[in-house]
Image (tube, rainbow, N blue to C red; front, side, top):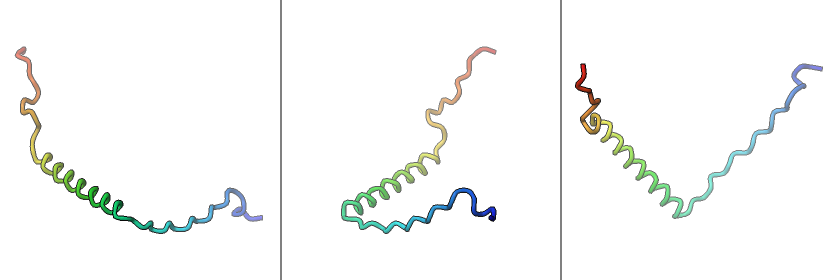
Amino acid sequence: MSGREGGKKKPLKAPKKQGKDMDEDDLAFKQKQKEEQKAMDALKAKASGKGPLGGSGIKKSGKK
């Protein structure tokens, strides 16, 4: 009786999933998502180049 026999048995590996066939609607949707992602990345790059919005910063009171 060896120590390796006890405990949980490892599950068998599941077979790899086959790549599903995509129709025109799926391909169009994927293309639209890629274009939207590119647009978002461009907007993020444009927004990160600027400083703080508003320009007023922290308001300080007149008291000393």
